[in-house]
Length: 316
Length: 252
Image (cartoon, rainbow over all chains, first blue to last red):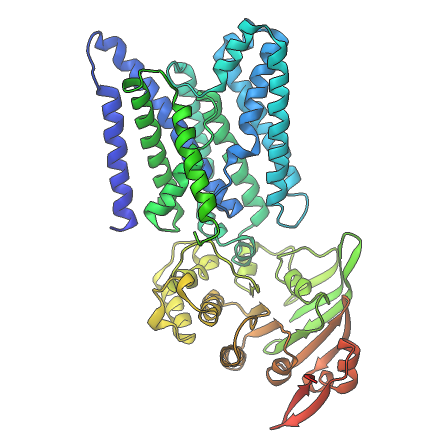
């Protein structure tokens, strides 16, 4: 089976999973349940697409298959921001109460942080990917510790609110945010289409990309900004999901066995949708909300990550 | 013409390239020789835009390389680096087709595929063109990369130690191919090479570097010389004539 057919198969599976999610056990007040389910499935699909898309691009730019954009501290920064707002202004403050403001603030801060980090990355002319990783991890740890520190100090009731933000939750997504995210995603994708043609060449590495006439720094900077915006959208919409990107992109590579990014990106997005919509369905119907989707994804993702590390000494 | 005028490059206050001026004529093979750390690779990387120079001018056919469009430069000059570790699973044909990127931006036309076929035939890779790169031997992989450079169809070709890890047969094969590219297709080749005998037998000009400075540049016969080689390598190298070629004997 070629990668084109495989991509179509993935699309069909994703569509079926989505339909099951929306239509399963649809009884009672359909007029009330159906729109809510559709909104929630759109939110899941947006998150899944943003993560699959961003991680594929990020792995290509950094020429590796283990590093995901989440490891660069965006998640920790999001948590720090949420905790800080509660710490400074309380959970009843306007920012915490209005999810629109909170969303825009989170996206804004995360994108700004990424821009700063990228300035560091491109300051030198050496391949400073490892430097970026290091700085990102250190900052991530720093943000995490600082978050913990503030969480210890705040009122236990406030802490409950903070903890609520810590796990990805798709059960009650704000409708307005879904539209906003959808709009942002469309804009980002349009902007991305200008750089799409470079991805296959970027996968050959920096030297080859420059040799083949890619304006390397210009393109990579913009792609990294796109990645940051996508991850920020996903995180602000439902919360941090650490391992999803790693999982889906690697599965896409293994499954599609191609280097063509058109198919890799679509494949990653589709696998991501299948994993997230399917996972959420299990959370709702099998575990009856006794656990959250991020716990399941992190569990499976963690195992897969260890497997990748063990496999690393062999060829990809 | 590739012209370097008073080029400097520093890494952490250490001058790796110190006031180097070189000009390379069209339609020749110019070898860059010298001990490890002499700055050969740095120099060739600067010409190919992989790293930026600190001071000086680098021009190709009279045009400054930094002011030219990336895409136009990629049709004029190509480089093959010594390490080509790809973490992509590509077939030879797919790799070679990347050489057409500057012309087609990824959407290859019929003409592009003809060029790809030509390049594959030129490197005699037709039988194995659908094999994956990780299934190939070092020599075959190097030939595949050279085929890609040929498909890129640039006037100037820069190679950074293309003979690394190759046995004698493959080394000779590749040097002969390069010679053919220059003689038949009028390419201009700049090559970083460690084996001075290959440099002596196949190049028209030699540029000898040491500690980031030029020790000697000129025609091959002027550089492959006892005194000059002693200056470059700090050892006595006996130059003998074998079949009208200058062969350096330095093994004992």
